[in-house]
Image 1 (cartoon, rainbow, N blue to C red):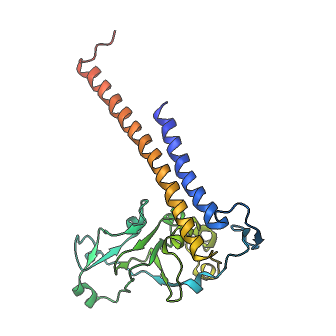
Image 2: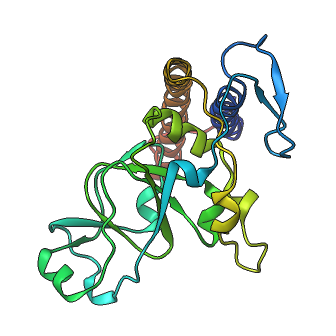
Image 3: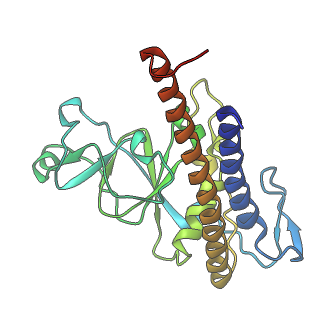
Length: 248
């Protein structure tokens, strides 16, 4: 099998992870559960016993701030200041940043503090299409290409269930249809957020984590094969060039 075929398998496995998430956060774990219509193109049916609050019932929306050049690049400080590049990757929680602010920086700037446990997402540009999400683990700040969804006090849903549904939710469904893609928060606020009973949320999270673990192991094995074959190929080329490998 060539590396190109392995790379294709990696893409398919990643798509499988997304498909598994999409299926269970919209239909649940019981394939025989009765469904009801929603009249929503991206979510045509959901189980009849699920609730359907809107985003604004569950979250407050907090935008980011402009990030002056002279404040960028600090490797340590009192608060992380996250940019779009910080929310890339497959991790659920965000703990490190390339930029930090001190208490002294805050005294000189009117930045909006984001609490721990908020859900970060891109809100403008090409990054919007990647649907990266992260959960904050401490108080932090975000730049103006990000926004935070902060759980309201009445929101008692399972944190990871909320995260996985947000991973499924494509922000392109609520963009402003402009030249530069941008989340239209007016549209997002009134979108429904399907919510199963709490015990079912927990079961869905456990199922996703088990599936992801199995798929991630397959991905890791494939990547190890790719790395081995790439290194082997490079070694053969080097040996041939230096004359250590005799080619008749």
